[in-house]
Image (cartoon, rainbow over the protein chains, first blue to last red):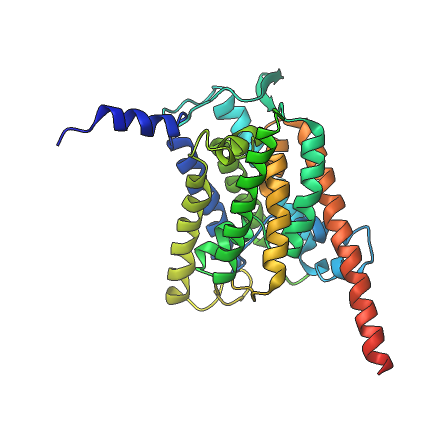
Length: 185
Length: 152
């Protein structure tokens, strides 16, 4: 059977940056989660860090429940930041090249001490007000993209699958409305 | 925790490094790329979350069959199961509005800082503020419930 070129063209338009950078990145995110789980038995999510870190500065009972995990959650987050910096210093800077990586054209690149860094064009009011809702929602909803999305879905947890479907559907609706209102980027 | 295994934090750190490198490589640390997915301009993003979920799912399914507990903590290997209630829907919806507005979620925001995105500090400040607001409110309502129960 010969593949229909019109169909191939349509599929290519849905994935203008291919899928390899997404799939490889996802495998690494999963691998990082597994490394921690194998050694410690902890299915680590990223958003608890917000509350556990607040326990250093606030005596509110809600944050104090995370006192026992706040030190390693800081270590986890520091690892995430530095791992992303390692990506910037290697692949993003072009020091390491691979056909699996599609650099794309979003945002702005700039250079500091030979390292190619990247910054967003998305407006600060969107980041700040969206961030507030992310901070409230992930903590009320018992998890975020990593807690529910990676660990929960990986656990075939019905709670997490419902959580993911909820935030994914609402996020798509929100982004489409914001774009339709002419807000860009 | 004074009695933790000496390799506990180093292992968490290495896991975080791989996790953050992956978020950078996948471009999920870029709000534009998340927004392009949510607006259906580039459908590649689900490969990140579901790719990661498949990898962790294999480990979560296999490890309990291989050994009972994790070597560094003695914690039994269990799946991440949380009880379902209305909060999962309400919180998920609030998170969804925030994610759709900003294009950034917590793990990706930490990674975004790592790839050089200083502007993402706006989102991180917002996340801490939001997490504080819900924690303040929930601590208050817990204390109020406890006081009410004590008065009965």
